[in-house]
Image (tube, rainbow, N blue to C red; front, side, top):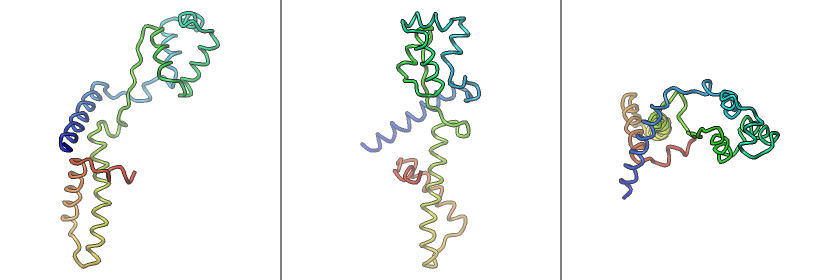
Length: 161
């Protein structure tokens, strides 16, 4: 049962990573700085008054909504409504930082960092007992521990965040 859950999580990671590839190298620098509503409305040649009329709200209310988007305090439901008023749709995504590129890369980095700490503690104890590992043995142990953390999605992956 637990193995099936782990397989499903790995499958979902792969599916999301494929989706991220279709998004390309989209970065924050490519996006309007919190002003999608105003930018798209302007690109469509739609005034604030015209959009407010479509939404059946007062123009000052639209300005407040545009400001709330800029401040990142707008509700997703409201943003969706505004997009619909411009014959657009809202696409909401949480994507890996550019340095990672995939969920798998995030997990591997996280697992390696956790494995270094885990093996470090064990190595220290072994050294106190005059049973220290060679550098190669230590590195091998780190890699094996990292693989096991990923395979089982061990809670220690995120305990040391």
